[in-house]
Image (tube, rainbow, N blue to C red; front, side, top):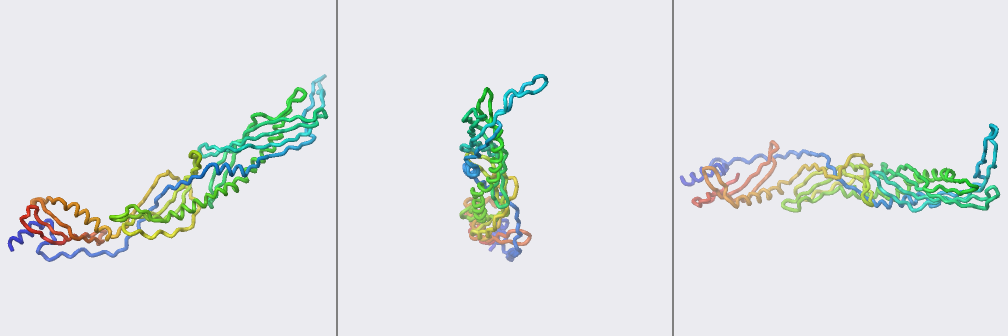
Length: 373
């Protein structure tokens, strides 16, 4: 018996619970509800569409033939006057004519410039002056202009894209004819008709842009975001449960041939250790919320773990450590074997861990001592 008591005294610093004193009761189990800690995480989910779809929308909204010209009795040549004896005297009479022609556009080319989309629209005018004062049967003139429609896109509350246009154009070759030594131009007459056609484009564009159907893409992303993602498959399984709250919109930019909408999902995220949690129930797609998005992930991940999942993890760590002796002051190397582990929540926001083990000196002079710590 003295040898046995000597063995307990040697191992008392390591196995206080294994002494011959009355067994110490384990800490009480706490049944308090786990406080729900939550904060928002932001997940960047950019959406790209082919910029050619926007070009096609502009093509559909703008007719090929912009305007037909048919203006009889147009003053083509103003009278020439000279000053004689202090008075303006007509030298040549005014000359009227019948102007006929059309203005058409060519294929539209869309390019990006920062947040702007610029549609280059080539415009061609062909104009004929007939019955010029009864002197000419017909004379044809042509002219070319390049219209520039600077388009900025937005998204309404229903996720429908719309655009605002700023229009400008310049004649590279003004339409006109040479007659009786002077130039007769028709650019001003063409200009008056082109401007309202381009304004019609701005009115028609939202209807055509709606055919891009951005909303359906957004809805699929929103519903798919109510999910749980695997962070670790086993030992232990770990899941991130995502519950979206808002869909963020931070404008768009040009990326090669793509138009990139900067979108993000603001969600409540939590980490669950154990079996896969039930996916959150999807809600209806909310209206876009304006907020900055930097194409990064910002996660707040409170962890909710099942103690039954933590126990084997801790026990494996102890087994790994037990492969080599524990060096204890004054006792020297001690070999320990960990057989069972129990973990649970106790009072004071603490975790109680109970370990059933056996320990003996590495020298082999004494046998195993069993106990629970």
